[in-house]
Length: 64
Image (cartoon, rainbow, N blue to C red; front, side, top):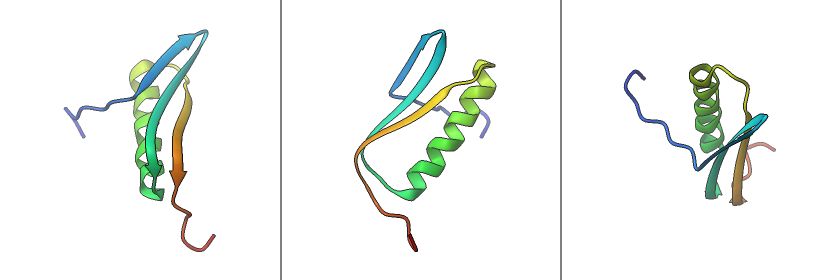
């Protein structure tokens, strides 16, 4: 995905780095996409991050 733009809703750092994605509703595929974005950020920032997804509601995963 060379040249792709990746956006986060919040990046905060005070010793520890937190990356936050804010969504009104989360579907299972949103979690997978966010996970990929968090991994990319770790590589680009060269540091560990605390990944967070904040949502008002979420769709239940099938077969759970």
